Image 1 (cartoon, rainbow, N blue to C red):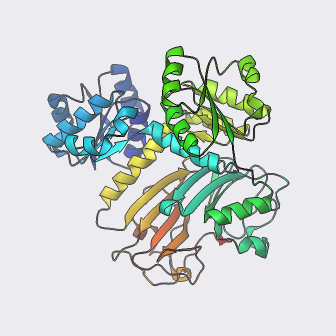
Image 2: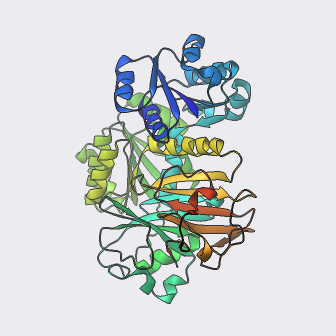
Image 3: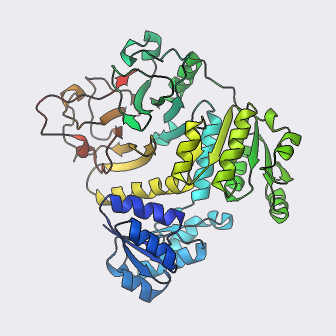
Length: 466
């Protein structure tokens, strides 16, 4: 597909990286020579220097024949003008990054008037992601499928866990009866789609998928079920903090926000009347101690500097806070943080990339099964996707044990007539079902992409239903 990206910042570069990797024809538009040089040197993309809101620049980039334009500059108004202009020139689908809180309440009207097909708000999406983690503090990360009725949770295996050192096939009947499935694992740099012979070891990161009630029961059996969070300490008063605190107020949580800019503190005090706003340096240990940070149930680091977020998060862990979440857009920093036990590291640019990749793949596969969700887990090496099965899907009504699946593919959940099923060998896919697939491969566009017709032996599901 021909895709134009206006704005080569963090989000724009990450999108270009992922989309070019999937063999799309990507063109980046930016006014900065250094940004374009970086993209040209590192990625297989075309670069055009100019203002993305300019008709001449958009024409030079090929907007008249483009399939998608993604406007991801730092200015919402420019992004909207880019989409409006590109749509008039002939671009089929437009996506705008709109971050301003005031615009958020007017999005339906803006989309209709300006001609934007999709609006992305990285800060709001990040806030929603963090709020999910605070609802389930035992999880290192949490994704939802099928309108929240199915969850995917990652957690780190500890040496005293009863699952440690034992094959999944030998787990107790009590565990196997739960509506959950071990669907992926990380061990060092290796990503694994586990089967019954997989033996969890201390330090592995395991991913569970299934019904929320089953997740809760599993973590209770594991001895990791944490009580609900009541008090949250947030460092940084930017847009993510605003969105997150609004969500937390709605959840009935008590929140403290530390922000160093006095003007921003005044603004937040007016916007968030039920939240305690503290003006000060959230990286200052004395301030944190004076505000009794150790009494909080959760700590969230949302400053503009990834380095500060990681350092103060490690300090919060030292102070015994059980749930710590840090924002970091740098993947290498996230890896370092997880190596020292900080598992809940959130990246706004990757959340945004996942949202857009879902749309792009859906457009590529307009006649096949519809992708309704896409998440990247295990350091981005594994994808979890939700599809709606239709008449184009092959092997309908065939028992899963008789299917030939590509290596590294797992059919994790099937939702049939509203009933959530952890599949077994006799389970079948039917038209109208929703199916959740976990894959070590990138680029799955359709349910049919999981089948390997070249295999002579019957394929396996690839995991152990519990």
